[in-house]
Length: 437
Image (tube, rainbow, N blue to C red; front, side, top):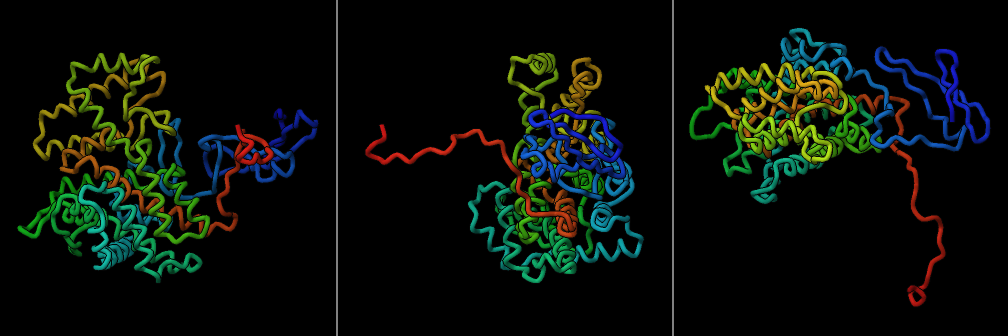
């Protein structure tokens, strides 16, 4: 097929096989690229589109998050991510993603109280943990326990009821840090710590993770602020793999707890949520600044399978706006903890300098992304690498549930059913066993 010029709101194709002209509508968003509406393409031409990874396909209409990868822009409901990270708290960002506006003082207090009231989990749910091996990966535990929530909270699984959808959203956002902290405690053999209503969202998570019944645990305000920023920076990121998984699972009518568990499973992949863990592993393998020239040389060698982790992004073709906030936070945490000579940070800073100045990296736009710094921060705060993706899931739950609610309320959404380009065998006659060679 070839494209021909047409008026602004249509896109015309000519089928070179038949000479037939096909006109498709062009849809315009509030910002960003236009999209061609291909819903009638198969009926008109007998053809599907072929787009592995859906890199050129808009799967839905959304009002939640906007990314301009070329300009390095990330907006939540129109607000820039750096403004939100600098001036808002994570619960405020949660409220924004759910409700399309920042809360006023009364709304903020009410929403935070709702999250506090829902932060405990059913006591029977705590028994699920003993069913896992002691060395189970925390993401396996998080996925399983989150999915099990649907067995306990039957009063918020009716997806047709907007009140139940709202309650389910609040429950998930409130309970996921409790479930995550319990997963960590289970792996260490320490007793679970129950949430406290006098602490903020980030403070509560740190308390439940690192506190013990033996002595009072005082949350470091610098670390809780850093934790809050990490949650904000990971709250939502448009139609990525895990968000698309949540939407696809939800399109079948699955309950919200099952959908979020599906998102957690997708996030677990090293190409998605495990990237910051891979960055830390890479820095540890490099070992010292002296080895950086060798590492950079290998990264430039197209015949070498080595690749630098934490540089470049599937969407961003500019500096990841979240990385700039994370870089500042990284220095604040290390200074607060008195970590002056951190070899991993020295390596990271030298790699960052090279990436921003070396013509090879600049030309290919391999800028440091948010994962480049987050692993260093989390390690400094005392989290094992197995918990890194769990923290990502805690933050992303609000994005997932916001996207799920939007999908449920969208009248044009249908059950997800991608098509394929079949390249297997055509119909063959069955051969009896005795006649097979």
